[in-house]
Image (cartoon, rainbow, N blue to C red; front, top):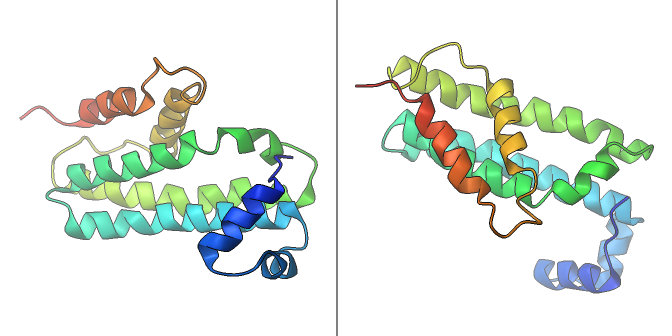
Length: 162
């Protein structure tokens, strides 16, 4: 399981404007805190989809912006991957939560871009998200590797020629 140092808990408490004791009262162990933070970040990523679609210049532009949010989420979570595959019961439901929240958000963006004639229909959200995830592997330990740039090429490649 990933560890959160005491300094990290202090930082989290300070950013939340509460004391460390309050954090531990709500999250008795570190796994509970990790799960809560992870779920909050998944929710923020999922909620960004409809907001970007409503405010984006085009559905494809909104998809591209959402994919950037997704990439940011992924590259900061690779350390959590081992915990998600551990025997800790608290982590069992996180992958399903991730899929249940993020696949529909991505699917909505893909459908809007296809309906607008910007991309071909039939691109599956789960497929795209797996591809993006695979492009993000290694971004955290190789400063020469630019996952966002490669993912940008992938998303650009979804566009239909005009």
